[in-house]
Amino acid sequence: MTRVALHQLRKVYPDGQVAVEAATFTIESGELMVLVGPSGCGKTTLLRMIAGLEQASAGTLRIGDRVVDQLPPAARDIAMVFQNYALYPHMTVAGNLGFGLRLRGMGKAEVARRVREVAVLLELDDRLDALPSALSGGQRQRVALGRALVREPKVFLLDEPLSHLDARLRVAMRLEIARLHQRLGATMIYVTHDQIEAMTLGQRIVVFDRGRIQQIDTPMNLYRRPCNLFVAGFIGSPAMNFLPGRLRRDEGRWWLDTAHGAVPLAEAAPWPEDWRGREVVLGVRPEDLAPATPAEAMLQAYVEVVEPVGNEVFLNLRFDGRPLVVRLPPRLMPAPGERLPLRFDPVHVHLFDAADGARLECDAGRTH
Image 1 (cartoon, rainbow, N blue to C red):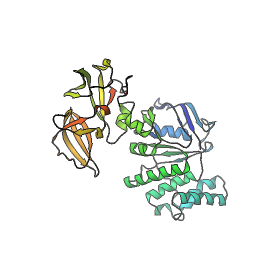
Image 2: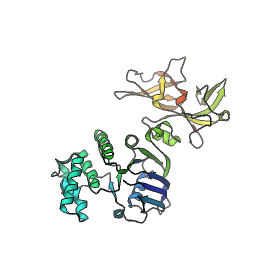
Image 3: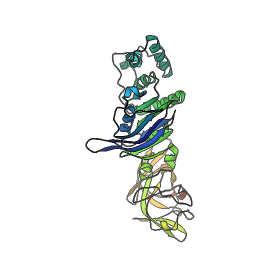
Image 4: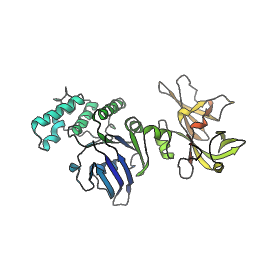
């Protein structure tokens, strides 16, 4: 097992575009680290720099005890799995699995041993004589993974390996990759734009936006304590609800003054007095909003679309001209057009500065 350490890694293209800016973090030995963010945010570029397929403009990269900045991909002892399976159509599963080993001059007996071990691990041992055209999408993806596994590299790099699979197969392959990581204890770096994949697979997650790292943390810490508006809106499905407004303290209670009325917040929140009059964005998760009686309502919203998905219902609402999403159990099913009183526990709100989007903290305690 091997750790990977990045220090101030940067990539600038000849036209001046900064793809990755000052990436500094460590993937511990045996860790499954996920790089996540929207398309074009720099996560794949960073993975390619680790692989040696892109030359870094600045910074240092260590794999194990070696600085590998100037080493070619073959000398870095890594294996990469791409979006495209890139299987040789004229070769059997066994041929595809062992092709790279044969190119390196490995003996037939050792190639056969490694291919057999990996095929058993991936439950492909009964398909070794099959051509890729005879395999399902999930089996082809397992062959692509197996081709990396037989190399026994120090680090596995996976670049959106499930993006071409349908929804059912993506779920199945997520489980297979998680189980595989647990069995092997290997160092893995996994790139995806799908935050559900990131949350379910990653031991830690690096959230990217526009080439910059926004936050590095465990999945649940990212969900419970996002450091800024971008992370709060990107992590979680459905996304966090946002209400911009101005904080006001009146008669012992905090309020959020919005363009269409005041929303009562907390009475005993440990927020400093100098937050009075501050422009903020209040964030609340869909599961933390709930229907209320008119007397206990904190805001009124109009139901636009009801989305029943079996074990839960998503209500798409409008308040203050802004969309809101509420997650409810399936027994509650308001009708479109209905006016719905809502409440939330002020303990579960997130407050962000309206100017820079940073999470607001205070010395007296945490806002969440």
